[in-house]
Each structure stands twice: as structure tokens, then as C-alpha cells.
Image (cartoon, rainbow, N blue to C red; front, top):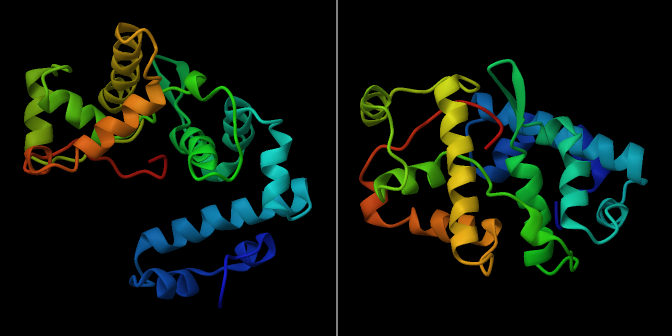
Amino acid sequence: MAGPWSAEELSDIGATQLAAVLGQDPEHPLMEQYAASLHDVGERVSEDHGGSFEAVVEAAGGSAPALADLLADWNAFADVSTYDGEPVPFYKRAQIAAADVDGMGVAALRGLDELTAFADNLVPHVLRVDGILRLDPELEQRIEAEELLVHGSPEEVELRACAVHAIELLSDALAREMPPAEIDAALWNRGRAPRYKSRPRPRSRNTAY
């Protein structure tokens, strides 16, 4: 096919078709997960916004936080962990989608400075390698041994949450001239350097990031 998929096409896309587009093995478990997420997006856009992606953005009224809140209610963007019995909403993908809508020139959104860092595993890794985050020695050893962390486990939630908090502090130290989302992007790009790629990063199997 040529051009982007419509909401209706996303609702019907299969793992085999998706794998062909991405050049991946159709039997890989991620293909089914990707297809399920795209189904959810297609169905929500069709049912709630008349099949129009533009209408999704318009529903946010020009607000990046409002767009992130809207997307966070979709299964494809679900990202709430539990810590000590309390919900911890990260919404990494919902927030980065809102930032990308503005950054790619799709729509000018206000309130970008109200978004938090996009909590994943790379930014905590950069902060750890740079000595900003100091981890429990046992957790450090597990990460260096490339042991998978369980998604939603206390240590995985703490890594993400501490990264978000650290970036808020960095932004405050810069008098908010660099908002958290901008610092996040800078650290993410920093993480592509050999210094960071040469060391194991914390890894976890999940669909949140």
C-alpha cells in the first residue's frame, strides 16, 4: 500500500502484514503486540473521533498535557505501575506522542513545559553512567549481568521514577529554561554515544517503552 494507514486499516491490520512492512519475523511475539496496539489506536480514532487523526489532536484544544491525558486512556498508551500499593502513572508514550505532534509541526501545542521526562530505560542508564543516579550495588550487578528486570517490580519503578525526578531537579537548576521533555531528549541522544552503548543498560520486557 502507499501512504499512511487509515484508522479503519489499523483496526484490521495483522501481525503478518505488519511484519512484512517492518522487515521482521511474523512469528516474533512483538508483532502481535504491535498489531494489538495499532488495533486499539484504530478503534479509538474510529469510534471516538470519526476516524480522523486530526480530530484527536483538535480534541486536546491545543494543549500538550491534554493530548497526553487523552491518549493515556487508550490501551495502546497504558503505562501505570504500582508501587507500595499506590498507582504510579508514567505515560511515557502518551507524553512523547504529544511532544512529537508539536515537534514534527503537526500542530502547535502549549504546555510542553508541563510534560515530565519520558521515563524508559535509556535515560536512567545515562544518568547512572554519568554518576547522577547511584544504584544499590546488588541492582548494579544485576544490570551489569544483563538480567532482565520485571516490569512493575520495585526496582524497575524506582529507576524510572528517580530518572523523572532527577530531570525535574535538573530543569529547576536551569531555571526551567530547559523543560524536562527537552532535557530528556538531550539525554536520550547522549545515550547513543559509545560510552553508554558499551555498558549494559537496565532491561525489562514490557510495552510501556
